[in-house]
Length: 473
Image (cartoon, rainbow, N blue to C red; front, side, top):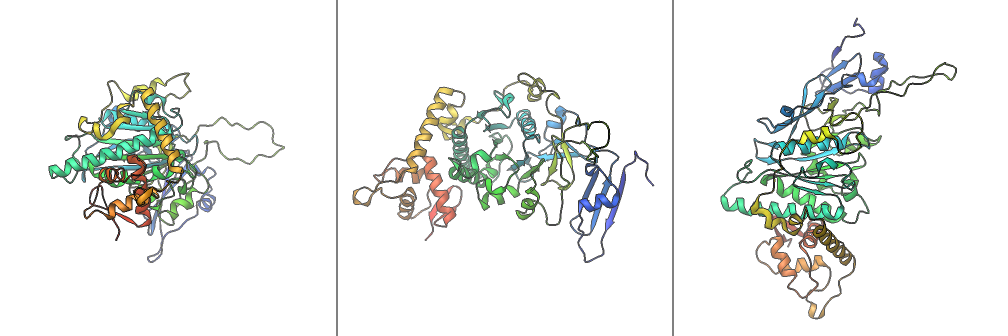
């Protein structure tokens, strides 16, 4: 019989030939556990389960991170917090064994601690000399301390599209340079720095009805395909809603399943969606994370006294679904001041440390283009964003055919005509040049990439090699 302050650990096993299944609510009832946050269940996916019962939630209090926590180890991982059993939670920033940049997805409802986690990851990237491109689609409110601490900070959907276009162009430029060098993998810092592209509040860019949804989805997919082997990673930070709100793309979801997936407090339908999309093994369950750690107690209307609602919050609690213990409850380090501050948070600023952030290599500046050059010039960036808005309006209008059949029809038709006339695979730049020479309306690189993405999804165009396209004949 355990005492009230003891931790109890149970190992359960079903007979050979059966697969272990459990119901969390029924398990709590059977064990007489009133507070579900004091119970942790992990399985091996087959026959065995480890059930741990705590006298109180072991993750109630978390310390801030140390500089050592923020530095990559020999496997390319940083420490982001602790599991319920006190062991460190490590998240991979770079795969040193394969030379691959990482793709990542962070889900969390409002108030779940997503913005604080983003701040920590950005600060860790700065300390590890990783180039950070960060789009804060909450108008810059999610992480205001990031201004001046990252190489590129965007705060609007237009800026995010320009950033994604630049990232894809840099990936293609690196591919060409590495191919000329005979390299098939990225070497950390030799000669280029690791680049991380992060879209915060990604739902706003990728949800149904978003003005740039199609192009944004295509660019995220393209960067996922091309960036990993050339040192360009990407992360989407999104509200915990249906995965359909992330571009409606099976390819995009499949790509994210291979990366680092963090789930903070989620919505009621999220569990079924995670299993359906393969982000959580069938039969596994996650202990729901309440908004606070206040015990759920039935109270009669005739009981004297008032309810005490002053209980610790659960910000930062979650599950690292891509880690070795996907169903083990964990909590991220405490990031920033406990109480709100009237201005920039000094504790968060201290996380970034001294000095300037890492910058994109000069050899890729031309590929990154005008938007990268204007990233710290609000007036110049505003002009580029206005041009993008005008481009978007033009794309909504039908293209009027011109005489002779040249340059007429949809942009997709013009692209297919160009590819059909070529005996060899073509790059985006080559296709752009030929399309703009066909007598029709002048288009921009992003429009061509968008058209290629739509054609590839329809099966009319195939991507071959590195950044090369051919017509599906």
